[in-house]
Length: 367
Image 1 (tube, rainbow, N blue to C red):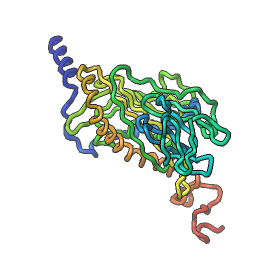
Image 2 (cartoon, rainbow, N blue to C red; image 1 turned 60 degrees about the horizontal axis):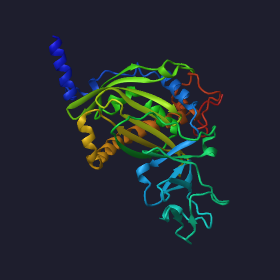
Image 3 (spheres, helix red, strand yellow; image 1 turned 30 degrees about the horizontal axis):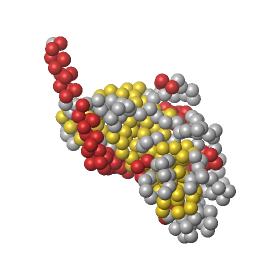
Image 4 (cartoon, rainbow, N blue to C red; image 1 turned 135 degrees about the horizontal axis):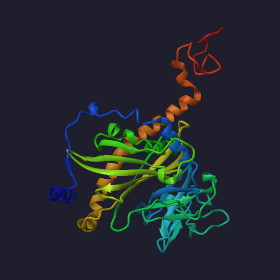
């Protein structure tokens, strides 16, 4: 038996895939009883109280190369570019001369050239144009905006621990009608994975969730999840943990199984308000894949061919998860303006005013 167990273990290491049974979507085990709103809300509240240092992710590092790159944080327009030594430089996208969009300019020997009149910006602050603190972690580009963050500044972002050794990174970005906290809240509900994303996940079980409370030890403030990643009829089972190191970041880390050490970093950046007056937020997700398999290091040569598929998979997930985050924003707005009260029976407790402000004139009880 021991010999058989060793053979089975060796076989799993050599071939991490499992053939998945055909299970109708509606026949999955419901997870609504385990997905406690109070647990999710408490975890989100704790994350929002952590220091973030006023740092915001604005782009993938690789997106900022030989040309100026535009970004938006809370409606503030930024321009990002590289100095002569490759240093990340960030400042206002508005030219201090007549307001031209510097993102439409060009870079010459590390200096940003305005397209209207040729004003050169070296990346150093000047009385009419402030250079902004910038940080390049090798995968993502960050900017510190103290007026927008409103917290105590830190010299560098609060960075998650990333895998050591060979890795392949891909970054995807989407914008939705919600707030950054809605994006983080989405990731603090791992129970929705197999139901909302059946094309990617199956056999999902939350092994442990943080207790409900304002203060939780760091080692307990995580969601531990057993899940199988779906690739057609094949599946790769792993155990992953979800943690939030700062208010606008949530990290999924594979702690056991194929690709142990790999991380998915979800970063949420406010993007101001849309024409409808509703908030916009951008999710920038970095997938940093790692494997101890000898062949993985050789696969790095094929990274340019692999990363588009990684981005496409992440884009598909976030196309759906932004709908989830947008719905959270809508529900919160309905709770705030009491729109949901319009559907309650007249004898049910509701607001102090029996006639909701959204009701038509002349409608409702008059006494």
